[in-house]
Image 1 (cartoon, rainbow, N blue to C red):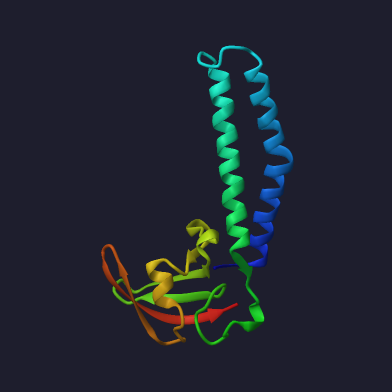
Image 2: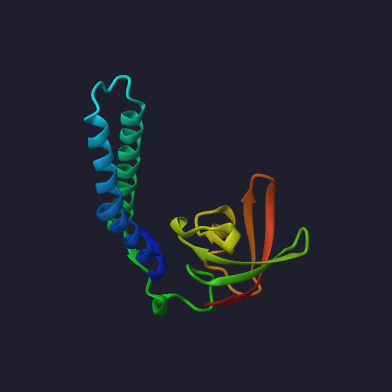
Length: 154
């Protein structure tokens, strides 16, 4: 079971609808056109159209699986005093005395450039459930990070 924000869920539904209603029919038409050109063994256009069709079908199936196995998060049900999904958490790396701020999100929403880390990442998992002032220890490839929670906002 994956939990998604309402925004991300809607984005995935929109992408799936676009793939099914617009992209797949276009890719199928291209494949039919290339197939009609004759010998498929020497037809690079046909092979490319088959690859595009396979990629489109794969993405459609992937999105369908995500959507059928996910739930939209009820923000009202989340604890406000602890680090949880969709909260913004500011913390200090006690080793380097560096402050960082991230939003904790599901793996399907992770985007480091946008300041979103997965709750399943080493840092995200270590922060989950902690309160302001508590120390979290995250096991990362370079060793153990000690992180002090400075603030939690929604």
